[in-house]
Length: 284
Length: 284
Image (cartoon, rainbow over all chains, first blue to last red; front, side):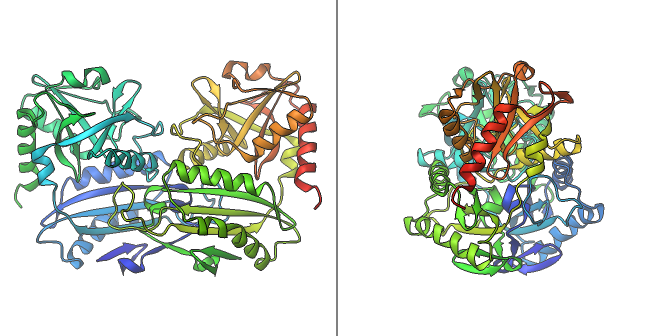
């Protein structure tokens, strides 16, 4: 596969960044993952807007010219990697660039940001979408600005790893007694005709798929409730599901070794899955 | 300057890591900064023990052979960079290595960790140690495992930057009403013959210099109190100072534009500075 790095298309094995890159030294960068179906980038504009918000929140100034060039880079990579006929993902990472000596504050004057884009084939997790997943609960150890989609992802990777080692697929993170997210997906509870999810505060990364699900809920006349799921109410839910760009919509059927309701994916989740599937694949 | 990267000594301009390095993608790595005086590494063993604790906490398994080789690498770099006659720092970073495709959980089977070591000349911040520094208070936004010395340093860099933009040198971070750290130093308050500092919990990176200061306090018969400085008590302190490997001991003379006590460095700080200075430079 070819990747894009700072203006060049390279074989992925040759794509390297300097050790003084602030992405490497500080995790001083942001990222996005896009879903591509037959060459079309799903909700591209929403991802780019979120990217801009993350960059702004971090004071990471990327020239408009560079920001505007990104969709062209995505398309060229998809084409050159021959990914038009199937499904794919695009990974974009922007860091504050390479600067030495290493100092915490931003380089002054600013240096060129590092722009890295990769694309690869993607197979949706159809089995998990159908069977549902098993998860464990754990404390949300992340920082207080989860709304920035930064590459400071150590707590997320540690949480996923801990879940795998417990023999389950993922985790439900709890902050102050309330369900926030999984390590890499948003979470929705279903109770009667109502979706319950965490509000878009600084403790939440507002998923693009989450946004689509909220639109779908409106269309299907399903109510939405942003008070969040309290930990002690987890087993009173009718259904619970995860949403994310590569997660799609995955029912959760078991939490901490106890079944959610009947232990099987529920009808509201199924209906939202179907409608989401239609949106993702329409005209493709 | 030469640096060390994965077994080779390279010119620093040539030192690059792959874009799939988990340090770059997730901040999935740890680091240490060592102080070197005339070729001698100050408190090297304490740094290496802390490194091992961080690696263990992250489940980052680095072969004993590699861990044992590090002191030799440090010395070779100091020598080859001609840093024996003056002062220097050593920067060590270890990441979980390069692995694709990008997935949150650890690579299985594990890949070779990335080992990066740099050394450069260092000039102590003597003026700040004498004059003291001005700081502002802000919320401690870091995650809940600050005891791991990871490269997930975005909150730290953002805090330092915000302080610089406010026209001061650094910041005092407050969590739940209590002073934790600065973005890159530990903090001690002085009240009568007593040092007050944050306890070594998961919300604190236990500085090596902090440890030396606690030893000095014992020798000088200064009491120590690990209940932490409450935000509302900041201006009741007689003195306050920062400690760190490249910070040494810096008195804080102004917080949020208000003077600390007389607005001048105090006698307890001066005594501890002097004793620390002796420890750092003894026999050198």
